[in-house]
Image (cartoon, rainbow, N blue to C red; front, side, top):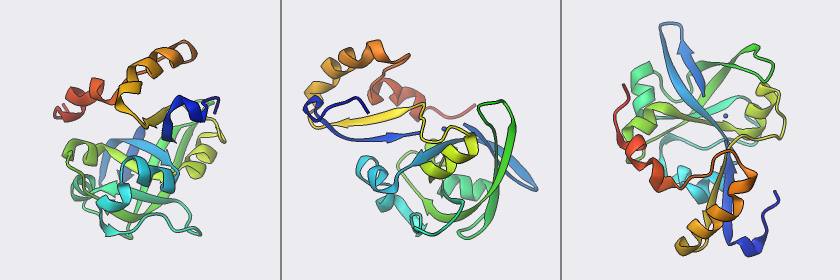
Length: 174
């Protein structure tokens, strides 16, 4: 990244939205490609896992899903599910993933919608390699957020703060 340590960045994550399906059920999800270590710092995902664990080093096509989604799809840790999405060439991609962990946060609508996979796996399936389309930054000091947001705005199509999404994230899905 072109960010510098003096920008006050403590950590970051990169993200990918599509469909999660079982033979009897289908629902929309946000597929988030993560680096486990970084995600654990940013969102404390490892502390929210109530069944199973985070990704194993050698595991292939692993997925961590929310408790609410697991209940909706009637799946358990160790079960398989299929993600279907489009790659950069608008081709339809479907890939089976094995649930390695189920998490529960304080936000049930997000637990229904957000699924986590290894960022390398998602990049490979999407055909984007190491390219990214969303960055989440965690700054060392809260008072640096607005000045930093203004500094980086010219380089991105959209820059927002997490509190700008609070009402959206807390409202029920239609």
